[in-house]
Image (cartoon, rainbow, N blue to C red; front, side):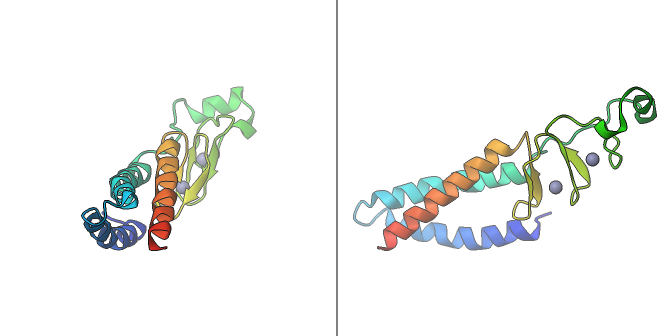
Length: 138
Ligand SMILES: [Zn+2]
Ligand SMILES: [Zn+2]
């Protein structure tokens, strides 16, 4: 199922892309090559960051047994897992995420340990592409 942020992203991104691919045939414009080259990187990193498990903590032990051995502050009462030092509970996903950064409404997913590199790739390639679009308009 495609969520609303994904459908908004592709409804904006896909119609723009052929315009800049057409620029490849004009004037040998290196910015058009950059924009056309970054477009698949943006799309792939967006899909990876939004579809990949961000590092949800899984229940590995008996919760009640752990409560007798470990201080309750080290356990998450909502998802009943043992917290790691940099994990946090996401109120939107209602799960604990390892190395939690934030819940991204555009990805409709948390950004954590397993999808942080894809998220940064998406951000950097998108910013570079938007900057190249701005420069090509000058
Ligand atoms: Zn939790
Ligand atoms: Zn979340």
